[in-house]
Amino acid sequence: MLASIALISSAYFFGSLPFMVALARASGLDVSREKDLHLALWRKVGLAAGLSGVFVSFGKGVIPILIGFGFRLPVIVVALSGVAAVSGEMWPVFHNFNGEKGNAAGLAAVITLALAYGVYPVLLFLIPMVIGAAMRFFFTIFSSKESFGERIRFRESTNPIVLGLPVGMIIGFAMAPLASWCSGQPAEITLCLAILFGIILVRRLTAGLRADLKIAHSVTRVLINRLFFDRSARG
Figure 1: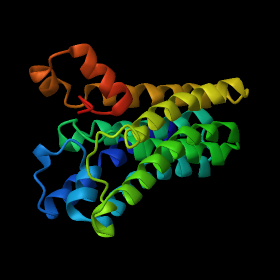
Figure 2: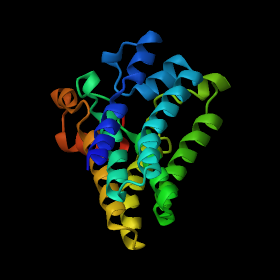
Figure 3: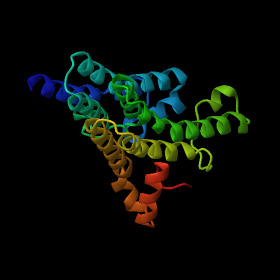
């Protein structure tokens, strides 16, 4: 019991570690003005900073699960440690409970759970994500007249093709528990995947929502755009 509590609580604090905030500040970014530090580092600082942020977020989703799996803790505890780590990145205790969207850490957590416990049907959740990522990548790389270095920073765009990525992400996270349930995977895995989808959905809908509602003409439109496109407005 103590080992289970220790893993889940440690996973939350591990996810809360403010690496992204420290990197952004060291890179000269005003953290209070950036809605997404991953994108801000990628677009405003460069490839190395962007990749390092993604790498750390992936590690947050992977390491607690591997530790729990290695010590043969119950499946529900191991899966919840991944959820806790993602929650820590979203609502970090070290940064006023206002963190990242949790997409990269959540992606890593689902993949790690699937590989650790052989629940491979869950990996179907990658299909819409890969399609969305490919749409964004190829459109950005081949449709711009900017230099290659400028293009790989993936600057903000309202083009429907580019917006396929956030749509693919939310569909993918929704598919994970559904694929687990339909394929008869352990109930503990399905439950935790459903919780993970739930917190990612909540974070997507609520991050910075108060500021958006102050200037919004339509609350419904803001919520719909946040749900599908991960932003308050398409244009």
